[in-house]
Length: 503
Image 1 (cartoon, rainbow, N blue to C red):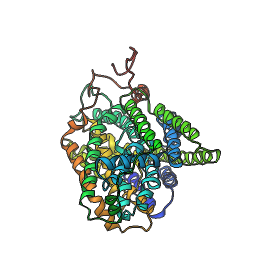
Image 2 (image 1 turned 180 degrees about the vertical axis):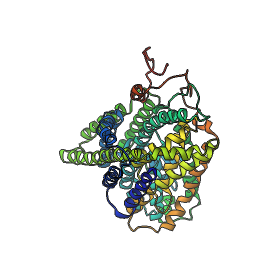
Image 3 (image 1 turned 90 degrees about the vertical axis):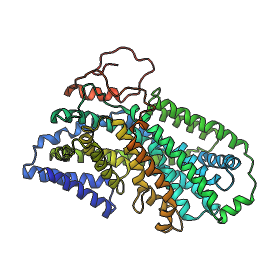
């Protein structure tokens, strides 16, 4: 009966790829079919399904899902206000004086993606923002469609690895739960990798582990962008750029370049160091954008209504996906699919790198048909606990997972960001031309993934907490409290308190 769960998963993936139906509808439909079949075949007790309301309510109470709503508001405000346009134009003029006119537009687009992608919260929202700003500016300047498509897709995925994007925060929470289940599974199976005192990772560990690989990737992509710009033989856009002198910065552009990056970097730093929570950072960004919109007279009542409509639509879609993924995951667990996957992974005991490669390959393939949120809610809870029963450094695994997700979104021909970016460009470029434009960026990304896999220390340089603590015991009633506590950012000076994990 365990294999029925895998068949349900395959059925769901096939329906997502072939029907165009909403993901949450597919998951709920397949879950209903699986539950009815399981009860009819006597594969599991119906009492298992009674825990679904508690699971859903428990997840909706999490503060990270409150941040999800705020991130949706921030993304909608960025799409409807002219702030990103001013940031791009100012950054382009500034970079023209440093790297030259030819490379300035491309590098300015990546810079805007780096600053705005974490605030947008998702790849799709970042891509829409960049398409409406840098993408339209590039089209006006005569940049070839294939190059525009590749640059928008690349820049939109920076929010996956640059903290504190919502993708990274939700993955951190999912890894916390998976690490807890993995340690419990390792104890039950008597795996050799189990260590007394292993500390369950929290969101801060994942944020800090992703910093160095993310910074390295951004530097490499900037360098590749500059190098490619210098090698181009010269199209219409390049001829215009080479023949024109750098334009002076306007007063509003100076203010935008002076204030906006400073505020964004400050918020990112505060979240990454654990001084503020993600929900507080998102609320701060939302309030600042609202104040700026009112002060600049751009946020009219009609535009505010559009912002709220977009935010509600995105929030509703994500929460529907969350409920559907939780339901589907419960049905799979009722069939014992997680136990089956754990047994397969146990066969790889003693070969953690091979087990890691198998899981990362599954995530890479799933990224062709699933968004980041769908992967986190649906695939991570199934494949990650057995892997973390074999691998000690869960934050290292999380950083690799983020990089692999980023690669999956960019790989031709089905990469999620690539497909969306190509759909935004008219005339639609040939996939072969887009693949050639993407190739240098994908090679850099593959190199970073190989480096992080070969040298786990690249994810440890900036971590502020140890990997182990004195031996602890995790009991069933204490598990939720422990995970809730450890998912909170660390206070600068924590007061002594009773806890399942000593400070």
